[in-house]
Image 1 (spheres, one colour):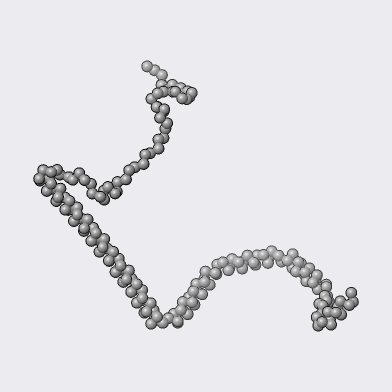
Image 2 (cartoon, rainbow, N blue to C red; image 1 turned 135 degrees about the horizontal axis):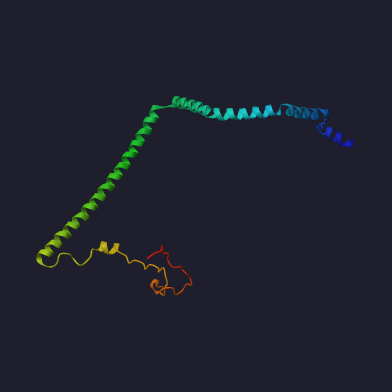
Length: 183
């Protein structure tokens, strides 16, 4: 055993030796004693500190935000801000032009549809005047495309059920109505 510490000392490393082991136990016992005597005060102090932190936190954040705003205002460059505003305005103008072009195309389509409807009405009226009939019996392609065959709805009851047949299936008893006394 005596050789191991000398071997470590030869390598330049010293093994730490606890010179005063009573120091650790005395410190621990004094901390325990302090907590036993003043534990409630320590606990109350911690709760008060937490409460104060919770209450002051929004104010601290506001102060930090104001400080950041002041720093941001100091860094403010009017040329950069002007360029940014011009870019935003150009983007808005581009979007507005796209919207106007789409609106013009839609209005043109609507005008063409209205013109076709008007021509059909005029044609129907001319046919009516000539005695060929008031309305065309051939439906336009749009109406044919819109109408699709409906799917058959599933039946809710079987075919052998008829409510007018009486009490065929069930053995349920329903007592007669009670009518009040007399007559």
